[in-house]
Image 1: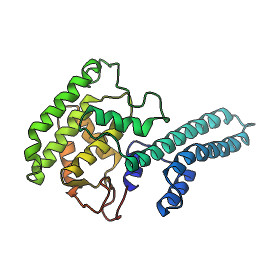
Image 2: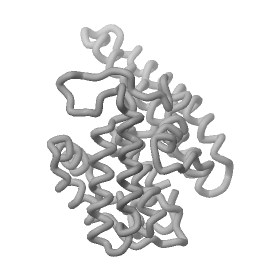
Image 3: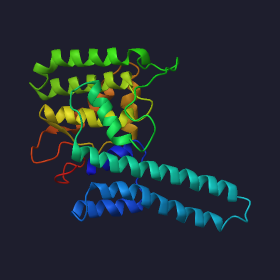
Image 4: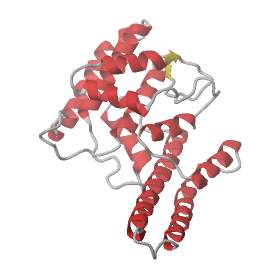
Length: 257
């Protein structure tokens, strides 16, 4: 659960109070994950209604239009955060296709965004000439090359921590540049590399990572510099604790989803 909160936070998605309350009940075992999906709809709607009521009270002022627009944007942001959060929890609970390649990336994307945003699991189809991302028409080829390269290096990457950190930073670099989806790539990347790390004997403690840290590492890798991701992963990689679910945040928080 801690990782799910953190993964949303790093992408500026903050669940509303009704969702947080429903999550507390879920963690206590009062209800299952499907209740979180219901809360993502009913809780966000309730929040939206409260905000609209507050904005109505200011309808006689000159700032009413701005207030309404601000509240509507906040409602949409909370609704998206609630939906993505609930689906992320369900994804961790139910799992996804773990093929180590594009199929896994698409499966993760579909799990966390279906019903939350259009095009869940669909590959990017368009390019922006000014961006350094992989051409959309070659995403499948690029993903296959990443998998092949990773397979060649896999035998030695768990030999020691330094070797593994370098391999993980290179993987994050390649996935960042691949950018297979129109949105949500960073969230999918963090889930993918966390699963990959755990499978190879390491856990990633995302708890201390700030959004600025991540964005800086991402910006550097788009300039062909993996130094940012090297420092980031070096700070958060720990030997795998098999009593934990692999996705964790906050090393001292005990078992986490």
